[in-house]
Length: 76
Image 1 (spheres, rainbow, N blue to C red):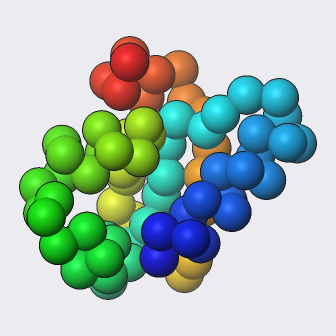
Image 2 (cartoon, rainbow, N blue to C red):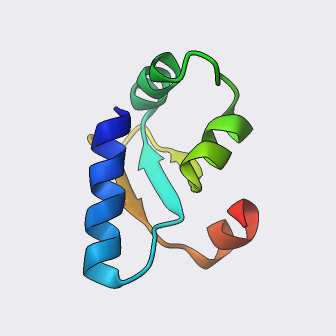
């Protein structure tokens, strides 16, 4: 999961010229991320490590990243 998110972040940065600040995923993806980060289970710790706000949406078939002004304030 981490390598997938890294590739999404890198592609976004290459395309737009700045880093994404939000990742949208469903709760199953978030559980996988928590399993990948065994030492970090809490949302704030994972969000801080990624440098992005995490938004959960059950409509999200695959994780995707973006940039939202309100997320910049929450992460920054």
